[in-house]
Length: 199
Ligand code: ITT
Image 1 (tube, rainbow, N blue to C red):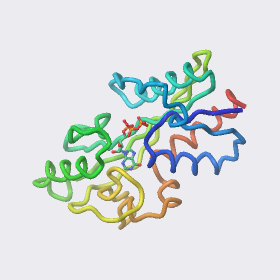
Image 2 (image 1 turned 120 degrees about the vertical axis):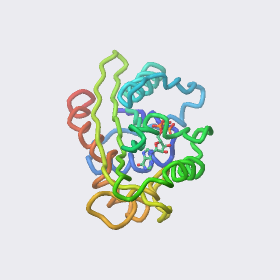
Image 3 (image 1 turned 180 degrees about the vertical axis):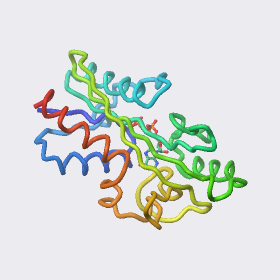
């Protein structure tokens, strides 16, 4: 069976492949990059789940294969959940991780440590060519540092320190991050659904 990973974000892709590999699913995994002619879908949803479903359906329809998608982001308590679904383009330029993180730290410079709680959210969506759909969400809670630390991962990893750890996500090994992450939780939650609906 072929399963399409409907993302063009390479940080996500690396983590997704590792998380799904651990589940021993025996699919042929194909990435969205293998279908350059399929245009990116407009993320017009107002929730992570809606956007993940839009992306999964677009690839499932266009390829005729089941597709999974990930919509994710960082939600900061004191900002009422922002950047949230706008995490990838918070600074204005889509996917510029360094600019996004720098702007966010700047916006939070006056916020004292006890009020710097935040979480990552990931919505993992599965869509089949016949229109069947499922979504599972996962979260990783933590606090935001004042300075980035660590070189692993991507996006806002250098500034989120998971609760119960003294390191940022970017200081965890990839295995340690996948074990506790929003993405690990969401996609491990999707595995039984994949077994049932995709085989
Ligand atoms: P696709 O739509 O192609 O999957 P994208 O990067 O546009 O890629 P999103 O709209 O879901 O995807 O944006 C996700 C953003 O949230 C990402 O660019 C990061 O800035 C942030 N993010 C998500 N998961 C993260 C993680 O595990 N660690 C750090 N930052 C993360």
